[in-house]
Amino acid sequence: MSKTILKLVDLKQHYKVRGSLFSKTKYVYAVDGISLEVKAGETLGLVGESGCGKSSVGRTLLKLHEPTSGQIIYNGQDITQYKASEMVSLRKEMQIIFQDPMESLNSRHTIGTILEEPYEIHGIGMPDERREWAKDLLRKVGLPESAIDRYPHEFSGGQRQRIGIARAIALTPKLIVCDEAVSALDVSVQSQIVNLLLQLQHQMNLALIFIAHDLSVVRHISDRIAVMYLGRIVELSDTQELFARPKHPYTQALISAIPIPDPRQRGKQFVLEGDVPSPMNPPKGCHFASRCAHAQDKCTQAYPELIEKADRHLVACHHTC
Image: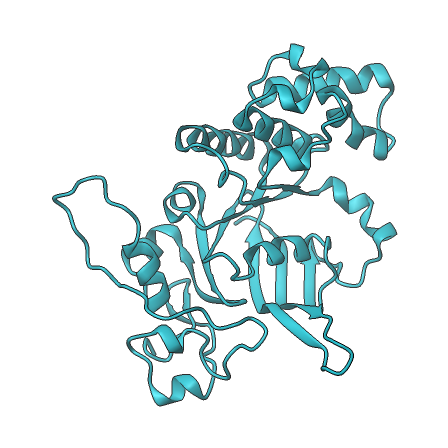
């Protein structure tokens, strides 16, 4: 069995919102108690509507944002209280691929400079060696060596994302957070990038946390999927089990919204009504209760625990108890 490389225990990320002179300080409860594990070589999909907190989970577990509370345990080490200087050595093992490749690449630097930078920061190799390593990275992601002296604006969106992936794998990481890594790309390019990630994962035994809102893409790449709603996980299961037997009403609604290419096939539709509650003022009970057709009195009084309802299938819902 694969080793657990990352464990989050009741992780919370509450962003402070500065009020006016006479008003109280408020908080956005972006992540409000997340617990999960990721194993070496595994892909965990993290899905949910925009604003549910999935990107905040990814950035917080990498300590790009300091957590409000909870634990981040990486490779058996509790890194929750690590300072920036203590995280430097771990940055080689924990990387991120951002959604917008143009914004994440320095437009004033050549691709060679961008890909050589990780080695330079960590004091690895000499200039000639770094340039050869940069060329090798380009080959690994399907780009020609000649790209090394060009600038980011000279490439398409898909090519720029390949460069972002090349930079992420430069130091042979063990964990990569893919933060909406294909959301800004054309559908045909999305499949190419997803297949590239799968290929690199197989070659390097990478653990991936794949953050997205497109369930069809997540289904293709993920071993397990965690469904988030308003800062919390509402369902967590193996991918095949989740799509075959979704238990939480929110998950059922998400899956039913996936377009079916055959117009003769029409699955049962779960139409959600109402708006998502404010993350600055989440409801006392189940956060989904105001939009759920199965809501009961206890749903508005107490938040359901995330418990196992079937083999490795966890759900937070009073209705499915």
